[in-house]
Amino acid sequence: MKKFYLFLLFISVSMFASDIHKFKLNDNQKLESTYSGTINQSTFHCAIIKNKDNGNYEIITYYLNELQQTVKLDNTSFSFEPSIIAHHKYGDTLTVISHKKDNLSVIRYNLKSKTANVETIEFDNVRNTLSLADKTILISYKHFRKDFSITEISNAGIHTIDISVNENLANRYAPNFFLEAPVAITSLEFIENGPATVSKCYYTGNHYIVTKDNKYSGKITAMIVDIKSGNVDFVNYMNKPHKQKNITSFLSNGILFTLAGTKDNLIFKTFDLFTGEEGVFMELSNELSSFLPEGITTEEYAKEAKRGLMKPTLTVNKAGSNYAIRIDIVDTQSYQYDNYWFHNWMWNQNNNELMYNTQQSMRSSVPKFGPNPVYYDSFITNYKEDSKYAFTFFLDKNLTILKETNLQTDYINPNKDKYLTPIFKNKSYKDIAPALTNTELRYICFDKKTGEIVIAGEKIENTTTTNEAKSK
Image 1 (cartoon, rainbow, N blue to C red):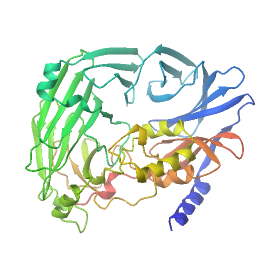
Image 2: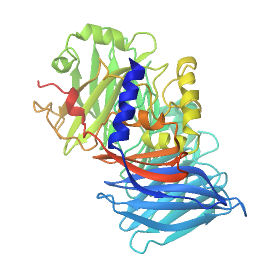
Image 3: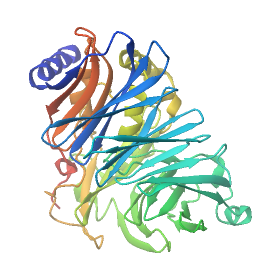
């Protein structure tokens, strides 16, 4: 049945995906990898090429607007193989960032003149990448301890600030805070299940923030770094139901949303990020009970959330000035935080068919907890139905529950597996790099049958979190 379903998906893509642009390489050129990125409702697509005669590399870049009008931007040349890790756009400037070994290259494309400028500096390591609409933040450290650096890349230039955390201050607020390096949380899309890790990092309002959940004490600690002044502060948030099993959190718009499990209930709380002041308090057995999936009681839900390696997850999507709160339960042994941009990078650097087969094997044999770059799931998985435990409810800007559930969320939540599986399973394609807009899936790949590099697009369903929300 699964093979038949995948066959139907393959037929669907063959019928409805359309080529937007094609080009062939010269005999002395070899495709090394690809990259695609989304800028609002436009996309850009890169092919990283090696010149077999002199050993140098080029990036060939095409920019596609919302109407699929295609513009070729100037090629950029390198003496080393570039590896794209991030991008952003401000005004008419598209910035693409590459990091390889000790080289950080910032490529700035002028979308009006189609010209490109490359600035390359020495840069030891990049541990976390936080991509924003108009800038990119890089976090660097040799070991996640008290000293690290924050680099901001924008149209204004490349600016680095070195941060040194007062060890006594850190030990007073969170003695084990630096034992686990954080996972970067994307702000450019909605990841429906969110992170299952205890340590996460964000960038908001000129602040770099690392949060750490402690399921044993019920405490969440945030390290807040002002990247303008370099000032570092710690804030504790107490979320302490009795005998809690799991605790998780998600930061959005200066509000820390938290979820904690007890023996027979789940507790939802909010806190002000900077003051630690508690906001709303809701219980699954009370205010949130009417949003539970049909046929599942509060006791059953709470029991499943603490069974074995299961863990509740919490994510927040904006809907204008409102908040769409999605709660689910995942198996931490097999779940990975599906960070779109990281997957994009992983696929671009590896043969997609080999990566798919290898990671499907890893999925069933390697114990995993949250995002792990070594054992990262592929960008696609076997097609799956919506989780039986997922539910969504909406809060207004004052964090009051809304009766209205038919709200358009800011970020769409399409079934990526549905659209990407047949593309990645197509044996004629290699070096596939996808990008999603609100209405289209676009991708660049190499077609082994024709020997061409292809940029293609396909319409997608504009799915939001509202399909899981129930009227209260």
